[in-house]
Amino acid sequence: RGKFAVVKKCVEKATGQEFAAKFLRKRRQGEDCRPDILHEVAVLEMAAASPHVIGLHAVYETPREIVLVLECAAGGEIFHQCVAEEDEAFTEKDVVRLMRQILSGVAFLHQHGVVHLDLKPQNILLTRSSPPGDIRIVDFGLSRRVDAVQEVREILGTPEYV
Image 1: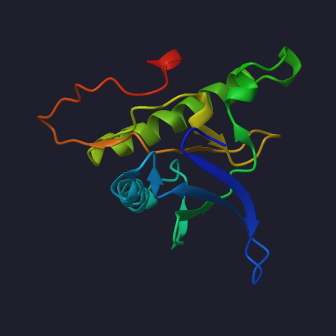
Image 2: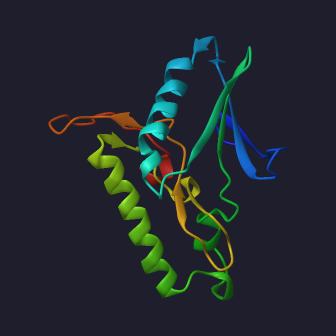
C-alpha cells in the first residue's frame, strides 16, 4: 500500500503467471486523477524496452479505479536489504551489479525524456530475493517528461530522500 495506490498479487488463471495489480483511484479529494494515471501508463509503455523498468502487462478501468497489471517483482523492495543485518545484506558484488542496473534504467529514462522524481529504495524492486535478482524501477506517479533544454524546478518526492 502506497500513498496513492494499493498493490496486490494476482494470478492469470489461463497461465498461472503471477502479476502485481496496482489499483489507482480515479478521484482523490474530489480531484480527477485520470491524467496523472494515464501519464504513468504512457511512461511504462515507453519504457517497455528497458529491462530495468517494471513491465506493464495490461490496463483495466472500473467505475472508480484504473488497474495496472504489472510484472511481479517477487524479491520486493531493495530497501529491506539496505537495512538488513550483515548476514542478510547484499554482497559487494551484488551492489555493483544492482547499481549498474539502476543507473542503466535511469539513463534509459533520461534518454527518453523522463525524470522519475521519486527514486528511492522503496521504488526499486528485485525480481527475486535470494540470490538477489535483477532490479525493476517502479512508481512513475511523480515522473515528468522533459526535453533537453527544460529544467524541472518542482520539488517533488519523498521528503527523506529529496
